[in-house]
Length: 146
Image (cartoon, rainbow, N blue to C red; front, side, top):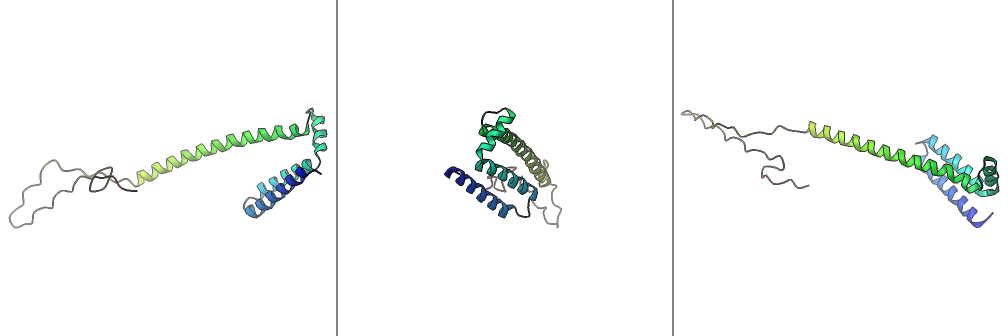
């Protein structure tokens, strides 16, 4: 066994242990699938001639090519699925932000067009009409600071 094979097997072992500790009890099916894929990878790392023999059986020249073709196809598929999920999440986030904005919206008060009627003798004068509210800022009309 070569030095590179030993290093790759060590890397696989570290990844399996790390993921086992991280995913324990969370996503058991994914962990089992990962361990199975890593065991198969470790087999072909330890015995590369077996990968080449298997590649020749299916009509591929080298064992590395036999392993790389499905891996590249799988990675492209995962990339496309991840992009689609990200875009769907962005659409859901936009819809959620719109709903929150609509639920939190307050009506805009307007200045009355006619002056209030004059006060009668002995009653206090009516309060002044509220100042118009700015859609951008607070009472000062300045933009709100974040």
